[in-house]
Amino acid sequence: MANVLKPFDWLLGRFSVDMGIDLGTANTLVTVKGRGIVLNEPSVVAVNRDTGEVLNDGQAVGEGARTMLGRTPGRVRAVRPLKDGVIADFEIAEKMLRYFIRKAAGSNTLVKPRVVISVPIGVTTVARRAVIQSAERAGARKVHLVDEPLAAAVGIGLPVAESRGCLIIDIGGGTTEIAVLALAEAVVAASLPVAGDEMNETISKYLRSAHNLLIGELTSESIKINIGSAWPLEQELEMEVKGRDSITGLPRTAVVNSIEIREALKAPVEKIAVAIRQVLEQAPPEISADLVDVGAVVVGGGALLPGIDKAIQSQLGIHTRIGDDPLTAVARGTGVFLENLDVYSAALASDSEN
Ligand SMILES: Nc1ncnc2c1ncn2[C@@H]1O[C@H](COP(=O)(O)OP(=O)(O)OP(=O)(O)O)[C@@H](O)[C@H]1O
Ligand SMILES: [Mg+2]
Image 1 (cartoon, rainbow, N blue to C red):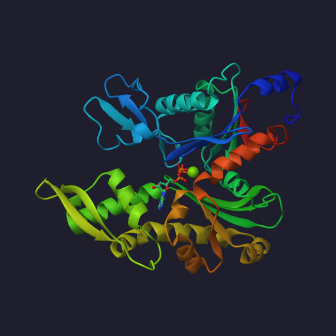
Image 2 (image 1 turned 90 degrees about the horizontal axis):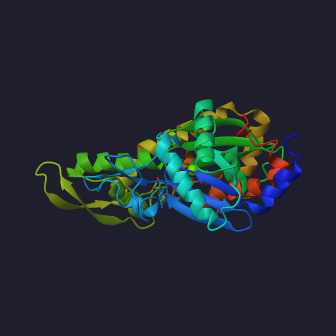
């Protein structure tokens, strides 16, 4: 029923710039029908601390705002409206979405877009509703939600519609989503609030306790990206880190190496591995048998941590590989759903009428 488009819908569809949105804790990506990914920006907004209004300049949303994290001057606050994969600040999320939707639509604003937005698996109805409402208030005509692991799997071209099971692990900024998919559905899944952000926090705590150095979020992320790893590197690395001495309070530099950072990252990596193991333990035996052949695929920004595939493989004993272009997998998947909206609209998890 829902997959039959009414003539009027069809006509609107011809004129609107329909979009797929990966609304992530760390990054938001927008795909547009026929054009691929048109926007890829950090999910950060700069707001006026007194009025709560989004700053009125070109740098207020996205990359410009991200560089303000942890170093905002008195009146300005850099806000990340999503936490652990879900909207934490409804108003700011709506403003951010409005900005991104407008930017992606360009001059084509005659008809409001239909959007497909990915959400973490297993989020509450309230959280889903929040995504739908903020997208509608941000200018969407109709909102469809799709589960992130399914979007990721479709995005990297896994044959999700087959009965054979596959295991997808999406390590993002706020959450790690783990799902065994078969016949385009999650057979077993879990979502845990341990991903890139927690890795950054772990590094920051480590620097504080081992080097008496206080560092901000951007610095700990750059340590992770530059010298972080989950498995021994062929050539271990070191890096100069600047921050504030926790005893003297003065600016200082410390040299840290990849071995100590890997040791610090062991805890979050281990938590992720344990959660994957728990998901696998719940999979039906036939599907487990498939996974022995098919293996696991890791996507999301966390997939770029060197050796994460080896660390997971050594814990689980099944072949684990990194999905191609892991940071854009979910967004590309929302794009595929978008292209086939007429076919999928009945299957898409939820929409604005719910
Ligand atoms: N080379 C790298 N090594 C390790 N981590 C990385 C690397 N590059 C990016 N990341 C991390 O990936 C995370 C962002 O990934 P991604 O864009 O998939 O998250 P997200 O989709 O916004 O979040 P979520 O899916 O949890 O809502 C950040 O924590 C970032 O630090
Ligand atoms: Mg994500």
